[in-house]
Length: 227
Image 1 (tube, rainbow, N blue to C red):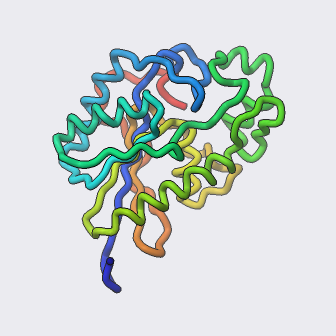
Image 2 (image 1 turned 45 degrees about the horizontal axis):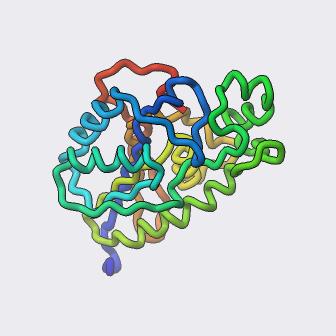
């Protein structure tokens, strides 16, 4: 138990999974789709693992979807630390209904209002025609997982690694920071294998330490890297 007056500061390191074939092709890839990771992704997993190696982690948590799980496993290998990996279904990507696997151009042609809402106006994103989850539903799903992670790591020196998905992480991290629903996209997107860091303490709000850090990646950024 943390003592009264403790300077407890838990840091959560959020990493988006490696880039996949559907990312490259400009397709929606939610919880129901899982295309292969690209060769470049495995190089970037090494780079993010080496970047984080100096951080003493207590635990790694990951979405069970293969692209995230494999990313977490490869990062863990590079960390060279004996720490547990726990898979949590609440860390999955958005469930996207009819959008799953569709090219962005085709979504624009068939579901332009939904695409605009998803990218630019989270408060206006409706799933009535397409199925899947709204931003509110994703946040309500993910927040209990983050609460459980924080509760399970009460030591003042704890650092935890959370590997998940671009759209889901973008929504959840901003929600944890108290960002209003209409403004969830205002910080911009998250690149594959990027690192975003939050800090918190018991009864205290989350603070942003770093957003979408990719300084350790050697390959030039491509528009298909970021969502």
